Amino acid sequence: MGGDPQVGSARPGGRTARTRAAVLDAVRDELADAGYAGLTLERVAERSGVHLATLYRRWRTVEGLVTDLLGEIGKSEVPIPDTGSLRSDLRALALEIARLYQQPRMRAVIEGVVAAAVRSPEASAAWASVIAERNRLAARIVARAVERGELPAETDGVAVVSAVGAPIYYRMLVARGPVDDALAETAAAAAYAGALGGAFAHT
Amino acid sequence: MGGDPQVGSARPGGRTARTRAAVLDAVRDELADAGYAGLTLERVAERSGVHLATLYRRWRTVEGLVTDLLGEIGKSEVPIPDTGSLRSDLRALALEIARLYQQPRMRAVIEGVVAAAVRSPEASAAWASVIAERNRLAARIVARAVERGELPAETDGVAVVSAVGAPIYYRMLVARGPVDDALAETAAAAAYAGALGGAFAHT
DNA sequence: CTTTTAATGCGGAGATTTTCGCGTTAGGCT
DNA sequence: AGCCTAACGCGAAAATCTCCGCATTAAAAG
Image (cartoon, rainbow over all chains, first blue to last red; front, top):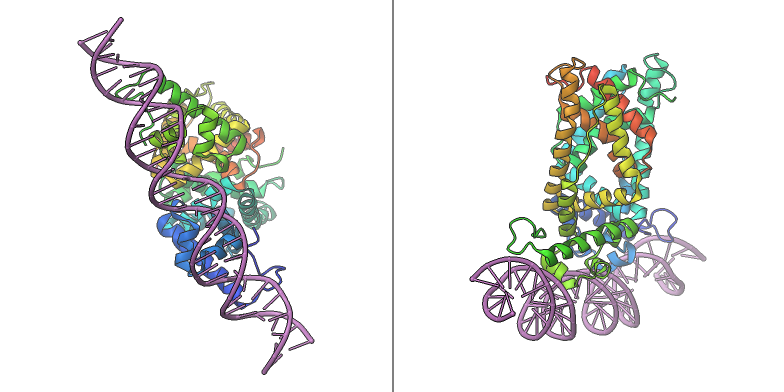
């Protein structure tokens, strides 16, 4: 869905950008206090002050809105821990993810993103891309550990950092319980033990 | 949503049960070949031969249909591996889950379930309950390992089996890539290493 | 076998969602 | 500054979704 006027659009200027910002803010707010079930084009129109017809024209569907929102999320910076040891890097990473999703607002956003990804190939691709990029960056944690000799060189860094995040997403999306620091600690400890034990090493 | 005529209903008999079976089959089929986006009451009506008004009356929404389907899923038996060692039990469990979701039909169902859970508290509760029950059963794998002296007694069995499943659900819902046996092997190996290392031990 | 009544089929009314055409606004450009 | 045109606002039409009321069917009870 062509909801992004800032890249390659014929008129990227002020009003269009303002409209988009207002709309994406409204999407976040609506997700936060009504959830994905309450996220409708009409509500976003009311909350953002942008006319309903404009939403249909530019984003077409709720999934289109979420896909566009994912573009913004993808641009945001996420700090990658670098504490000097794999063990504490993984712990810091796990806690960072957990604390992010302890915020009800962010949890609502991520649930909406997943629901949209299931319904729309565009949203799915955008979401996969955001995650792949973040995991690629976070994998530097593992690369540094390999350089320090903490891990075998064949270790799959993306697999390790995925293992750190997986239990947290599992809790949110599958077990559907609260995310807490203890869960993060467990995830980090298990991923660390797995990495040391060679569970993530290529053949 | 009161879609289950078999428990406590005034008339659990033949026609009602047949209607429900036809509808739930249609839900599975529709999910399999159109995904959650294509799952509408109208399509389910056409496919099942049940009148649209009946669907609105008994299930009310798409999420109601999925919630009812979860009731059936919850009743289905899942074998819990018992091979004599924790290592191979976890491996067998991981492969069982992975092979289940390698079937496009089952993957479509599970994506629909998650999308419904995000949109409806009833679906969310039903899904959480199915997962909790399965994890409770699978935790016997860990209990047996504790009895054999392979693991410390404080090990949280549900946490261990969750760690086996988590990477697979992560791949499906977050990374949005294909599920394969290698992923299952890695998940099992990492969970095993984590368990041995005490990552899942209480305090 | 008859009676009773819950559940379904059916058509259409009412509400909601989605789109369209047209006039207006405001960036971008000379 | 003034022209050009993409993007937006607006109201209403078209399409779709949701839910009635009533007739019919079939399961359960006597």
